Amino acid sequence: MAIARSEVVAEGVEAYYHCVSRCVRQSFLCGLDSRTGRSYEHRKAWVQARLKEIAAAFGIELITYAVMSNHFHVVLRTRPDMVKGWSAEETAERWLTLFPLDRDEDGRPRTPSRLAIEALASDAERLAEIRSRLGSVSWFMRCLNEYVARKANREDGCKGRFWEGRFHCQVLLDDSALLACMAYVDLNPIRAGVAETPERSEYTCIFDRIEARASGVNETWLCALSDEIHEDTRGGLPIGRDEYLSLVDWTGRSIRLDKRGAIPSHLADILDRLPMNQDRWLDTVKGYGGMFHRVVGRMDAMVERARLLGKRWLGGLRAGQAAFSTA
Image (tube, rainbow, N blue to C red; front, top):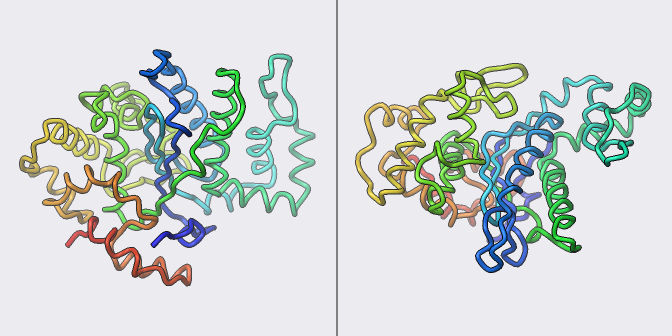
């Protein structure tokens, strides 16, 4: 049963979402196009840079991401509490940074003036609309996809659609669904055969977290894990950075070797705490991409979500729930 995005997304409620955008006609977002021999590898930096910009402006945290040859993944957490806490001036400044009123002679956006910020901040009706947009997953993805599409079309000297329809969106209802999705996204380059290990998977969140750990500096534009708390950010999972990196590293090597193996005891403890079915962990991560249900999580979480939204779509989701069951 197909379910509309509006049936599962709850505006103004903190939640986790997995979003995917694919290029139209199998065009290449990044990487080497085997048909033309042309490399678009530099576009990965465009996506990453834009993610940093919009993550700084929106009341939405970026938990993880992966930029692939013809698509990308992001896992997001909405933070309506952050949006509500912004002053009128801060809200206006964030919006004008995303949508500048003025640009320099080279086309670069100018820093919004104090006059422009104050003028927008004084318009209560417009500001209420802006607050809603700055907390919206749809507007987050719009600001990312439209920017990349326009830049790619300019580079290619063409017009028209760059993305294959609207982005796909899943709501992740509990920690086990979130952790499995995070691992699936972070391991996309390994599953695709373009990287051997997470530390070689450039333009992924796992690569950024590994680099940050090595340098001793937190990536403050990324949602923190439980032991990386920084300003305006709460940990994304009840596990620490080193625990998560170890779990993903072991999972990636096991998938790469196509060998199940036993989950090491220190990693088994992580899955027990979430809780997650250890026997199904590798199958869940490997099979995640083929199970694009709108809602993912345990049945009790699905029931609560349906109650919150006043919807009756549980019957069509039982198959998706079974794959992520902790039982």
